[in-house]
Image (spheres, rainbow, N blue to C red):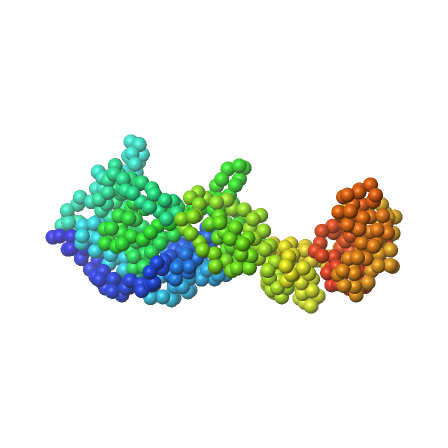
Amino acid sequence: MDYKDLANVIFPYVKDISYYEEKYPRRNLPEGAVVTRFAPSPTGFVHIGGLYQSVIAKKIANQTGGVFFLRIEDTDQKREVEKGVTGIIDALKEFGMSPDEGMINEDEYVGNYGPYKQSLRKEIYQAYAKYLIEKGDAYPCFCKQEQLDEMRAKQENAKLRTGYYGVWSKCRHIPVNEAIQKINDGEDYIIRFKSQGREDKKIKHHDVIKGNIDFPENDQDIVIIKADGLPTYHFAHAVDDHLMGTTHVIRGDEWLSSVPLHLQLFQSLGFKSPKYAHIAPIMKEENGAKRKLSKRKDPEAAVSYYAEVGIPEEAVDEYLLNIANSNFEQWRRQNQDAKMEEFELQLNKMSVSGALFDIVKLCDISKRVISKYTKEEVYEKALNWAKKYDKHLEELLEKNKEYSLKVLGIERGNLKPRRDIGKWEDVKENIIYMYDEEYFKEKPQYEFQKITDKEEIKNIINTYIEEYFDINDDKETWFNKIKDLSEKFGYARETKEYKQNPDNFKGHIGDISTVIRICLTGRANTPDMFEIMKVLGKESVIKRLKMAIEKL
Ligand code: GLU
């Protein structure tokens, strides 16, 4: 009896691996094309770190004319949730990260290397496990859970490395005929890899992100096929990434320490190993210390968070690129209008340790992204968001579509567009004062700044209304009139003028326009006041100004 007999007893019906090698031929791609994948478990939660990996993997594939695919790693069926796969597919789609190949719903896929869900590939893994058994590189293990627990306790007590290795790997030495006998007797077993590694020897590995690293060899006889017949992650990823032609495994750096084992598996299976790029996790600062963004503690860890607060997906993608390559920021400054797809991402420029998640920075990026949208886009996107999250805003926008477009069009489409909206959640606060029905109901609080004298304010506003305000003025005339008004009240026409001779004036034009602005909107900061007046219209401007001084 030899290994072949053992393999046949264990997996009598599986196909020979040559069948799969032919069925999934090497990809015919141009030189230098990179094949990447996102390989999540369908746990029902898409972490921002997963999106980060996808942004990177897709970008690298796209910019080299390669392929980015989605593989669902559901071999741990305890962790699975209903509709977990669809959740991932939808999230990727939402963020513009749809893969070129992979699952398209719970059970169907596109691409020539499928199925792209591990639970549908059971017989493939078994074929390769059989191949390893035939080679003497894998074996059945009959240890019961209690025995393993006992072994672990002994190892812990003796302060030894835990695991199934060396003298501890009992079943490794069971002769083939005995193993066959046990199987025929109906004993339960799993399949383990027979490691040839030694802990006291080192392997050298070059990680595309982390650089050169020395690791001790792996000497653990890890499980490759579990009792339910499904593979473990380690084994499945090797088989899949080989058959699916992955050239670069881009994944979280929690897997870095598994590299020695993975390289060993590739070698034993006779596969060319892919390149590995281990990404440091996104971190968060808390009380001066850094920790991983946590699914439990941080709402921003879930990709669904961004839709809730209304940060456009492209802003999130762009922010993630920003974290990935620190030179992105400079590139963006020099290429304001370029699509982020044009940026060339480099894996070897990624930071080795985790970047800090910075919501302020994300909002800045988002403000820039939103500032490039047309007023129609802002209207549609804000409305879509409001339909889910803010009934009041929804009504406001729907009831006053034409007017809202004008409001949203203020300082938009010009060279220096307004940058006050960072998320759809901010829209209402940013525009609500422009709607008379809301403004007069809201009863504005006027917090005057430099000029606070009531008589002075009344006079300025009355004079403005009576002598200067004309809704038909063009911008220059309008501005000149504010200058004239300033002069009339003893304020400098230009700030510069005031700074040169502060004693000659009560203040400057800025103080006058602030008074008008506050009386007009109840706020000290707004976009361009000329445009605001145009949108409000004559009647509303006068009514607002008068109301302000009546309240003084
Ligand atoms: N299923 C593994 C995980 O979710 C994938 C790791 C990999 O990308 O290879 O962590």
